[in-house]
Length: 177
Image (cartoon, rainbow, N blue to C red; front, side, top):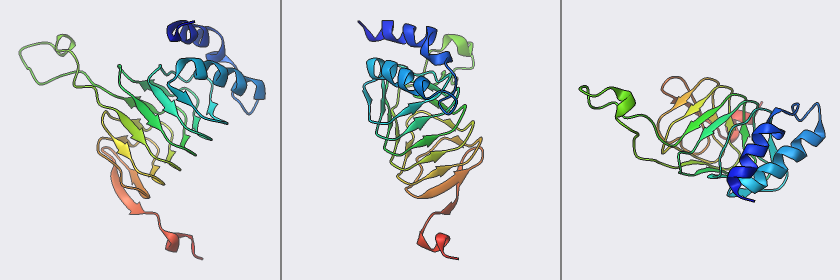
Protein backbone atom coordinates (compact mmCIF):
# COMPACT_ATOMS: atom_id res chain seq x y z
CA UNK A 1 0.00 0.00 0.00
CA UNK A 2 1.25 3.53 -0.71
CA UNK A 3 2.19 6.05 1.98
CA UNK A 4 -0.75 8.25 0.92
CA UNK A 5 -3.25 5.47 1.60
CA UNK A 6 -1.67 4.77 4.99
CA UNK A 7 -1.84 8.50 5.76
CA UNK A 8 -5.55 8.63 4.93
CA UNK A 9 -6.18 5.56 7.11
CA UNK A 10 -4.20 7.21 9.95
CA UNK A 11 -6.34 10.35 9.66
CA UNK A 12 -9.58 8.34 9.67
CA UNK A 13 -8.71 5.88 12.46
CA UNK A 14 -5.60 6.36 14.57
CA UNK A 15 -5.33 10.16 14.75
CA UNK A 16 -8.49 10.42 16.86
CA UNK A 17 -7.83 7.66 19.40
CA UNK A 18 -7.49 8.78 23.05
CA UNK A 19 -4.19 10.10 24.40
CA UNK A 20 -1.63 7.41 25.18
CA UNK A 21 -1.77 7.70 28.97
CA UNK A 22 -5.50 6.84 28.85
CA UNK A 23 -5.21 4.06 26.31
CA UNK A 24 -1.85 2.32 25.83
CA UNK A 25 -3.14 0.55 22.72
CA UNK A 26 -3.66 3.95 21.01
CA UNK A 27 0.11 4.57 21.16
CA UNK A 28 0.71 1.23 19.41
CA UNK A 29 -1.86 1.95 16.70
CA UNK A 30 -0.49 5.43 15.93
CA UNK A 31 3.06 4.06 15.84
CA UNK A 32 1.93 1.24 13.52
CA UNK A 33 0.57 3.80 11.05
CA UNK A 34 3.54 6.18 11.44
CA UNK A 35 5.95 3.37 10.48
CA UNK A 36 4.05 3.02 7.21
CA UNK A 37 3.88 6.76 6.54
CA UNK A 38 7.19 8.25 7.72
CA UNK A 39 10.73 7.83 6.40
CA UNK A 40 11.84 6.40 9.73
CA UNK A 41 10.26 5.72 13.12
CA UNK A 42 12.52 4.37 15.87
CA UNK A 43 11.69 2.19 18.84
CA UNK A 44 9.29 3.22 21.59
CA UNK A 45 8.14 6.37 19.78
CA UNK A 46 4.97 8.07 21.04
CA UNK A 47 2.76 9.99 18.63
CA UNK A 48 -0.15 11.54 20.48
CA UNK A 49 -3.77 12.15 19.57
CA UNK A 50 -4.38 14.64 16.76
CA UNK A 51 -0.77 14.80 15.52
CA UNK A 52 -0.55 15.81 11.85
CA UNK A 53 2.52 14.72 9.88
CA UNK A 54 3.54 13.49 6.46
CA UNK A 55 5.96 11.05 4.87
CA UNK A 56 9.03 13.31 5.11
CA UNK A 57 9.47 12.83 8.87
CA UNK A 58 12.18 10.84 10.62
CA UNK A 59 11.72 10.34 14.36
CA UNK A 60 14.34 8.45 16.32
CA UNK A 61 14.12 6.19 19.38
CA UNK A 62 12.20 7.19 22.54
CA UNK A 63 10.95 10.49 21.10
CA UNK A 64 7.41 11.78 21.29
CA UNK A 65 5.13 14.12 19.35
CA UNK A 66 2.56 15.88 21.53
CA UNK A 67 -1.20 16.21 21.22
CA UNK A 68 -2.37 18.17 18.16
CA UNK A 69 1.10 18.90 16.76
CA UNK A 70 1.29 19.95 13.11
CA UNK A 71 4.38 19.18 11.03
CA UNK A 72 4.25 20.69 7.52
CA UNK A 73 7.06 19.28 5.41
CA UNK A 74 6.10 20.61 1.95
CA UNK A 75 8.27 17.91 0.40
CA UNK A 76 11.24 18.57 2.67
CA UNK A 77 12.44 16.68 5.69
CA UNK A 78 11.92 17.07 9.42
CA UNK A 79 14.47 15.03 11.38
CA UNK A 80 13.81 14.42 15.08
CA UNK A 81 16.61 12.88 17.17
CA UNK A 82 16.51 10.49 20.13
CA UNK A 83 14.84 11.28 23.47
CA UNK A 84 13.04 14.36 22.10
CA UNK A 85 9.93 15.63 23.90
CA UNK A 86 7.66 17.69 21.64
CA UNK A 87 4.90 19.33 23.66
CA UNK A 88 1.28 19.76 22.59
CA UNK A 89 0.30 21.97 19.66
CA UNK A 90 3.86 22.50 18.38
CA UNK A 91 4.02 23.56 14.72
CA UNK A 92 7.00 22.94 12.42
CA UNK A 93 7.26 24.40 8.90
CA UNK A 94 9.75 23.67 6.10
CA UNK A 95 8.53 26.50 3.81
CA UNK A 96 6.44 29.66 4.02
CA UNK A 97 4.40 31.93 1.74
CA UNK A 98 6.42 34.49 -0.22
CA UNK A 99 5.66 38.12 0.58
CA UNK A 100 8.40 40.17 -1.10
CA UNK A 101 6.41 41.48 -4.12
CA UNK A 102 4.07 44.24 -2.91
CA UNK A 103 2.40 44.43 -6.35
CA UNK A 104 1.15 40.83 -6.21
CA UNK A 105 -1.21 39.49 -3.55
CA UNK A 106 0.72 37.16 -1.22
CA UNK A 107 -1.61 34.27 -1.98
CA UNK A 108 -0.36 34.32 -5.61
CA UNK A 109 3.38 34.63 -4.88
CA UNK A 110 4.00 30.97 -4.17
CA UNK A 111 6.28 29.62 -1.48
CA UNK A 112 9.79 30.22 -0.21
CA UNK A 113 12.56 27.70 -0.76
CA UNK A 114 11.89 24.47 1.11
CA UNK A 115 14.37 24.00 3.95
CA UNK A 116 14.72 20.99 6.27
CA UNK A 117 14.32 21.20 10.04
CA UNK A 118 16.66 19.17 12.24
CA UNK A 119 16.10 18.58 15.95
CA UNK A 120 19.01 17.06 17.88
CA UNK A 121 18.94 14.49 20.68
CA UNK A 122 17.51 15.09 24.17
CA UNK A 123 15.58 18.22 23.18
CA UNK A 124 12.47 19.52 24.96
CA UNK A 125 10.07 21.68 22.92
CA UNK A 126 7.39 23.44 24.96
CA UNK A 127 3.70 23.75 24.17
CA UNK A 128 2.68 25.83 21.14
CA UNK A 129 6.25 26.55 20.05
CA UNK A 130 6.70 27.25 16.34
CA UNK A 131 9.81 26.11 14.45
CA UNK A 132 10.44 27.91 11.15
CA UNK A 133 12.02 26.50 7.95
CA UNK A 134 15.73 25.65 7.92
CA UNK A 135 16.19 25.72 11.70
CA UNK A 136 18.56 23.30 13.42
CA UNK A 137 18.10 22.72 17.14
CA UNK A 138 21.19 21.45 18.92
CA UNK A 139 21.39 18.52 21.32
CA UNK A 140 20.08 19.13 24.83
CA UNK A 141 18.28 22.39 23.97
CA UNK A 142 15.05 23.54 25.61
CA UNK A 143 12.53 25.56 23.58
CA UNK A 144 10.17 27.55 25.79
CA UNK A 145 6.40 27.52 25.54
CA UNK A 146 5.06 29.75 22.72
CA UNK A 147 8.57 30.47 21.40
CA UNK A 148 8.93 31.20 17.69
CA UNK A 149 12.26 29.71 16.59
CA UNK A 150 13.55 31.52 13.49
CA UNK A 151 17.30 30.76 13.81
CA UNK A 152 19.46 27.80 14.76
CA UNK A 153 19.58 26.97 18.47
CA UNK A 154 22.98 26.01 19.92
CA UNK A 155 23.39 22.78 21.90
CA UNK A 156 22.24 23.00 25.54
CA UNK A 157 20.66 26.45 25.08
CA UNK A 158 17.38 27.44 26.71
CA UNK A 159 15.49 29.72 24.33
CA UNK A 160 12.20 31.58 24.53
CA UNK A 161 10.30 34.54 23.14
CA UNK A 162 9.19 35.89 19.78
CA UNK A 163 11.54 35.58 18.02
CA UNK A 164 13.26 33.03 20.28
CA UNK A 165 16.50 34.18 21.90
CA UNK A 166 18.94 32.37 24.17
CA UNK A 167 17.90 32.93 27.79
CA UNK A 168 20.72 30.89 29.27
CA UNK A 169 22.83 27.81 28.68
CA UNK A 170 22.34 24.48 30.46
CA UNK A 171 25.43 23.23 32.22
CA UNK A 172 26.55 21.12 35.14
CA UNK A 173 26.56 24.07 37.57
CA UNK A 174 22.80 24.55 37.02
CA UNK A 175 22.17 21.23 38.74
CA UNK A 176 24.22 21.91 41.91
CA UNK A 177 22.34 22.81 45.06
